Image 1 (cartoon, rainbow, N blue to C red):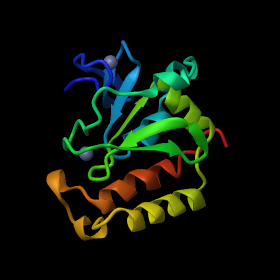
Image 2: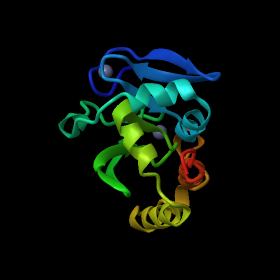
Image 3: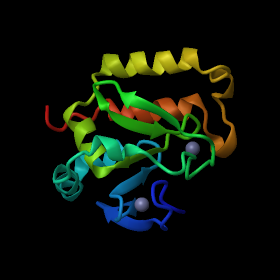
Length: 160
Ligand SMILES: [Zn+2]
Ligand SMILES: [Zn+2]
């Protein structure tokens, strides 16, 4: 699979037994459902790596905006509690693409459980037909899987 920013092939990196797809040139990670919260909570190495990066707000554009897993169009939005951070996620499988500096910003401004619920509700009601595909489209995705990814991030409170 190739980096969504520079098209180089991703390399595999491992943190605490979790394999991630990573582009060293762009510091870009591809996360499958729930993987981000899981790794960030347990890996000091991952935290140190992302902590050392500074976000360049201009450099958040991607060349390709399709899910590396399902090949569906990724949805782009500003992170609720850090609007300068632009995140992309797949509404089908819960996959996410983020660079290391974006991860640092998200960690430092993580959403509360109430904010996560509000976010999920808003998507549920703003994406036509989303609930109907709850039990799967391509790769067994749909709203259930997407919501699960976010419910894991909701417990992402290592520094609080
Ligand atoms: Zn790249
Ligand atoms: Zn996907």
